[in-house]
Amino acid sequence: MPFVFGIAPVFFIFIGSQIYFLTRLAAWAKKRIGTRGKRIAAGAAGLAVYLFYFAANLWWEAGRPSSIHLTLRDALLSAPFLWWIFSSTVAFLVVLLIWAARGIARTITWTARAVAGRSAAAGRPSSSRRQFLEHAATAAVAAPFVAGAYGLLYGRLNLQTTHQPIRLARLPKAFEGFRIVQLSDIHIGPFMGEDEIRKYVQIANSLKPDLIALTGDFVTFDPSPRRAVVQALRGLRAPFGVFGCLGNHDSWARSEDALTELFGQVGIKMLRQERVPIQISGERLNLIGIDFANSRGMSAGPGHMSSLRLEGMEELLAADTANILLSHNPETFPRAAALGIDLSLAGHTHGGQLALEFISPELAPSRIVTPYVAGWFQRPGGQLYVNRGIGTIAAPMRVGAPPEITAYELTRGA
Image 1 (tube, one colour):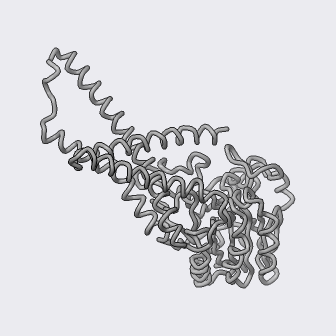
Image 2 (image 1 turned 45 degrees about the horizontal axis):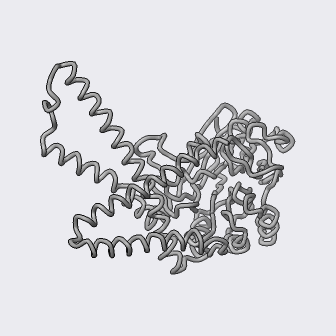
Image 3 (image 1 turned 180 degrees about the vertical axis):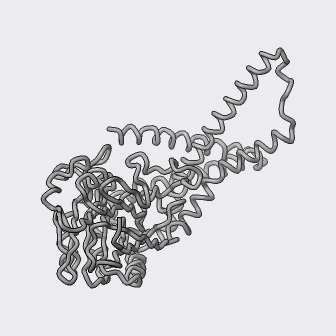
């Protein structure tokens, strides 16, 4: 229910954004196109293009299997449409903020003048100041369109490799310096195709991992590319194996069992409420993996454990060594730490994907569902790292949240 209440305002803001920007474009055209006939023709042509893109993406594309390569159709139809939808919606939010700020400023000014007994004309900003404020407002409204283009053309491809040291008090001596490389949130599709995934596979292998962890969301909603994503990831190599867990989108695409089987055929083990010992010289780590755990506002469906309770997890723990949990949903962390799970590796959030955390830590959409958006966290009993993933959903763009491959080096210590 909280998820539904979060979607409704976004829908109405989207509708408002389309009305606002179409109105502004019409006003702009009226000033620059001389005759009424030309304005009507230009308006009809613009509206036809606008409606064509909506029809092409919302009607003609419905039910079409996801492409696993970036086609000309995706580049010319899907990408511009999604850029416009998300950029115009965010820009309209900026417009609303500007309107609110102006309203507050005018109210304060009017009240101050009334108290001072001055006329309404007194203290009005000069024409140069008004012009400056108008230019500043225009730049602020244009910024989301520029940022959206950046996120589409560059931000979603600007991979960061994070080297994260992890100190574990219960780490066996034989595992000092053990390296785990994590990939998450693949979301195979036209904007994360087979060839792109294979590039990330090569990068992961070049980090010389001892073990590779995959933390879910291999597909999005369409189950048809599941064989392709497995084939793209089958080149991962690590001496102690490649292990993974499944995400909410894998469940929504009804692909959990199929992905488990397909990955098994290429030597990649999906851990589903399972554990596996990783052994060196008679010592071992306990690696655990679970399916997506349902949490506040987001469910992968019946049969999935609760992130608050992690039912049955006690049976998967090992008391005499470090426990590492692969859980797509970072919301499992408080319970995992309380159970004494030394390290949790998660994904799910895409780091916010369209985030403005360089302005404020709160400006990331993923904070609607979790406070664990990206990076390293610690609680009594355990640690968590949330990987930003390499794929995208909805908008094929990333702003303030570049794609990430994480390389962990385990060391002993409190």
